[in-house]
Length: 66
Image 1 (spheres, rainbow, N blue to C red):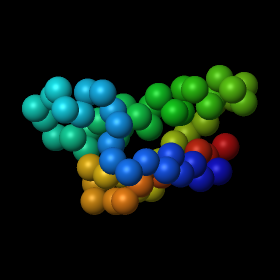
Image 2: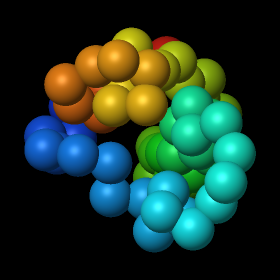
Image 3: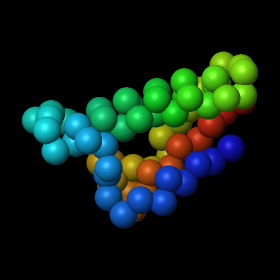
Image 4: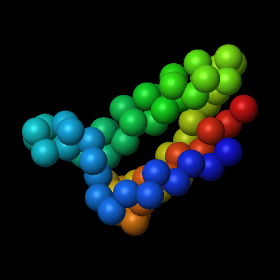
């Protein structure tokens, strides 16, 4: 399942506060989505970042792998 978060920019509240490689924040978002949807579906899922703002993309897109 592919999730397009349909954002115009990164909305992570830590993005403007941290002085670090912002691409690492995408891994935090990926893990958050993995845990949330694993709980929702009642089974362990894997996630993959397909596209993100901090990695040169135009949206946040995450693939959920069942």
